Length: 389
Length: 63
Image (tube, rainbow over all chains, first blue to last red; front, side):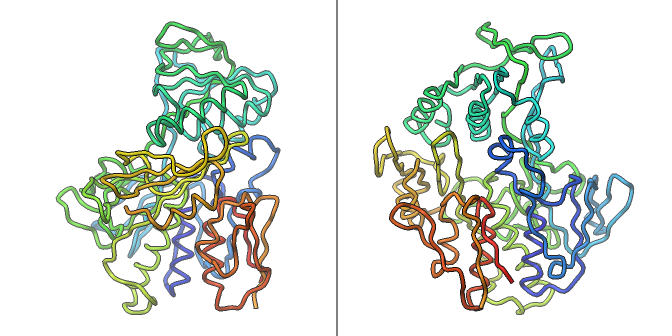
């Protein structure tokens, strides 16, 4: 998505050069959020989630199923797994994330799942039949959405998570406890402050053993324990790759010595970019709108570089300062949030009541840094403009 | 003039489009999306931005 949106932004801002989009997956760009929800419950194919591409406007060469394996910045050249090298004037790194995988003493593969790609969803859909016992490791958004979708499909669902309350590290204790309560009311079982110590079974998974010693039977084990930035291909260029790619305020890649690179831009959830208004270290944001916002910015910036003054309203050096937004549907619960609630030192219920619909506000040093609610769309949207990041 | 189509089976009424093209989209008193089916060409960039940020990818511009 980040690559496609960058190409669209380039063309819309008048860029006339050649564009090559290189994608590791064999599928054309598609929308990931439905993977954990409607795509698991319906027998839909890729066309249900693929982004429409207007080839006449985009005028880009799509290289799908091609993995970029290395970059030689000094030669302005990307090398693919096939051995082919592709020269560039500007490179946009938008390689995204992959699911983190655990390693167990009995490191069985069969019966093990994660959810990041369309192929992951297809695989999971095949086994998500009524009565199937499923263990999900991780109670973040992906883990909880999967719990809800699979429960609705009639699976028996156990969630194992290290935190004491699901989502509490992100949205606070009260919000998380209410989410947990609603999941439990639908029959999801939680095993909190626990982790999976080992897998049980000979050839395929028959269960998991928790660190408490408790065992849970399952035929499907899903790891939803976060993601790892796909940045290995950028190594060897003195870039700061300590967590994603460090960028400056214009999303240009930065070197370990603190200098910016003029011809490498970073888009999406691998970009670790600085705050505009908080004295905090640069951070990556794994929300859906970040690829869109960063792509729009980078497309305009590159167009401006290649034809200075041609891009209307473009202000060189302006701080990239998107408002992160995210949403999550779990059972009848529809969560909508803006900003970065996890930065808060103070969490207050702004509207509604916990048993029904509600909105929480998240403040840091008195500034509103996030807002999140269940339902109450217009109320959540009302506070959007007050967030300072 | 441009024509706007919202797939109401996909739409989950998140209201992200409202911020990009407030002249075209709004959430009503029941938090449901309402929109104008046609718009002037001057709104094209805003409507395109609204389509881009729609979490459900439910908005299309009919050429």
